[in-house]
Image (cartoon, rainbow, N blue to C red; front, side, top):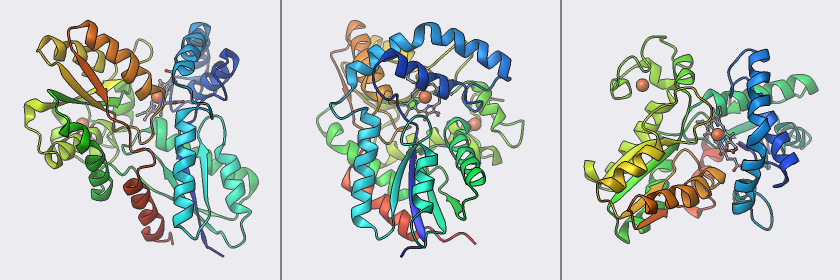
Length: 340
Ligand SMILES: C=CC1=C(C)c2cc3[nH]c(cc4nc(cc5[nH]c(cc1n2)c(C)c5CCC(=O)O)C(CCC(=O)O)=C4C)c(C)c3C=C
Ligand SMILES: [Fe+2]
Ligand SMILES: [Fe+2]
């Protein structure tokens, strides 16, 4: 009997590539106030407008990357859960913030296991964002309260600075660099600039200057962009890259707000114009490949790069179920101190 259970948490995918399923998923996702952070009436209006056209386009994109056994994100996350379960003598469940398997289902399954009193809640996001980690924790707290569950939540914070994670990521990228390249682009999921300012506990640091992320600040405890910068600099150092050999950009913009820059789309054109022929792209905001890596970078960015004069864009896979990464997760499950 184990006192601890583990819940691996990721974002989630539609149930299928049917437009109706994609619409249901996008509605749940975008109506989350941590994602579209507008008051309810404005959020409802904006999301309803997005839902007029986006589900069809997204369904098409999902269909182009869907696997026989489902969404890559969910299939890969399930593989990680199973590999982890084989290494651990504590129960490991998988949950998605949107869609299935839900956080509710995961927590109820763990709470039903004899002896489990603590859930090590492991959001699978290296960098902090309220639209990923905070919303997942809130949902878990809601479920615990609603069902009166007798369990403590022990939340694993963003792990952008943990040396074992960084080593696993750098090691997974090394074979791709060894095949030769002109430039490595580290493309992170974007965020509206407003989200960054809202998450700034000092209220004055984030985005007050262009180099805010390079200057030490208490704001960096929850600054998504500072976390991305940290991962990028660490990767460059571990992979022994010169400054001109790599750069960082942000993808997946939605809507008309200003998102953090530079945009990946812009960088792709710039790099092609600079004469980069063989471009490597890694996506370190994701630990599992998903529509954002496979379709947005692996398909669309590749086409864009070649149309702009590049020769080859190679997408470096996410950590996925890499044994070294699974080992790191297993270590964290065993070694994270119990919560008082
Ligand atoms: C306002 C919109 C969005 C914010 C903010 C946002 C933040 C954010 N998302 C991820 C990780 C993932 N996002 C994924 C898909 C996805 N993201 C948005 C919008 C926002 N994300 C949309 C509308 C979608 C759906 C696909 C589409 O229609 O384009 C995924 C992949 C899901 C899958 O099934 O494969 C992930 C993972 C992070 C890390 C993040 C904040 C930093
Ligand atoms: Fe997203
Ligand atoms: Fe910053």
